[in-house]
Amino acid sequence: MIHEADDRSVMETLETLPHIFRSVRAIAGGLPYRLGPSAIGMRYNPYGKTVEANAANIRTAFAHQDPRQRALFGAAFALGYLARAAEAGLEMVCLGAPTGPFGLVYRKTAHPQPWFDDEAFPGPAAAPVYPLYHPLMAFAAAKGAQVLPVRSSDEKRVLGLCYEHASEGRVLWLANLTAEPQILHLAGSEGMAAQILDATRFATAARDPAGFAAAAPRVISGTGFSLAPYGLAALRR
Image (cartoon, rainbow, N blue to C red; front, side):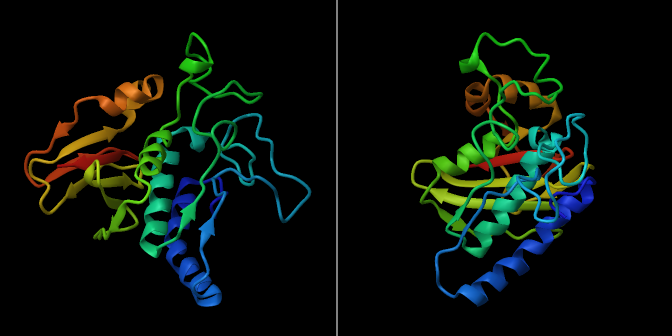
């Protein structure tokens, strides 16, 4: 399902992960559990001779490169994947590579990359990043943090990952897994600061990742806020 052409099937993959993780634990016992690499795009085809090159850059099954890797969809999927893995206590997860079809950072390729190909950048050092760069870099920086439980009333729509880190304190990441806005009601969220990654902030987050990460967050008033389609939020107090 992870390599399918329709968005719903790809996101439904996240529902299977807890069952897969429990099965592996039952079979392997206490052995270290490391997973990856895993992505929406397909590295090789176990059912045939090759993968679909997807030069047209469309949603298609068994594609080597998938346009959702570079989109908010890819970031929401990655966060949901890591949330499931953290809950199951996996030691390590790999979701891609620095660049290329499974990358975090843009580089010119043989296949088209709309918006990214149209931008003018002074050089490789100023290359933009894909949305999933932001949560993955945050989690890498929080290595060794204590993972805290997160409970969603509808895990098909929203998943979260929470950790407590010595330098950052408690951080809660949330991902909207749907193509519709979701109204989130969070216990104890009054006064929390939220860094939002959605369609309105896509360009800024891509062009200036350091500036986006350092930008002043939005302070939540009340107990809820809206998260745009495939949007992400990082909440801190």
